[in-house]
Image (tube, rainbow, N blue to C red; front, side, top):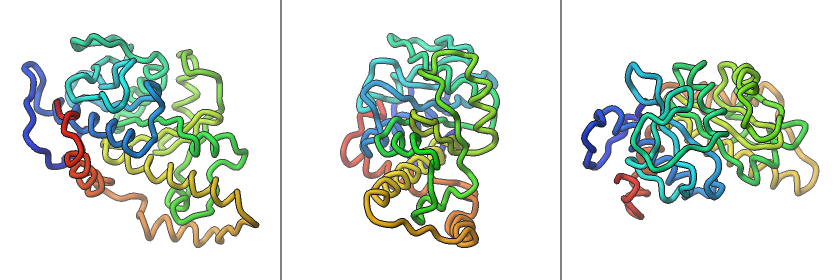
Length: 257
């Protein structure tokens, strides 16, 4: 699903619908933004976006490309069985297929799945208590964080059932000893969740390096979630994503190719 944010004109290749091209633009921008904010991991980790239409296809990065090299046209289109269904010189990361395909299959309302291996996110994922309500940012996610125990590199399809069961209907999941995962109806929504989850994890690691920690009462934590984000509401992340697109275009427009 598209974030429905205004875009500069882009040359749409023959054979690609306007809806798919918009999804490609949204996803390519997301890859570049994840790189801009230092949340990428060389050629590893992955972000996927559902392709609008009756076919159950999704877009993902070609395995071997850095995030700064991702463009709208070099994204790889695959089906839920991991078969490449678009012309591409690249394959896909097997772990990307295992993690992303099962979520797209079981959560049809999810338009984007975003996974990272950042230092702060992985650091918090290794803590028994997980994400703690130590900052206003972390309290935005009160009641909306799932956890999935580490089972090794995600190459075995048998893990998929447990992964989607652990995620349930939540939008944020901490993969124990591994990293972070967010999902959203749009690319913009998934990115916003990941941006603030990453910030919350960085704040937690910083707070733990200091003195005695202070935790607000539970009623305050719930108030923050409701007052600040209202369950994140409709159109999550669209204004922020549009602003970041403007920043991205001021630096480099090659992601539109």
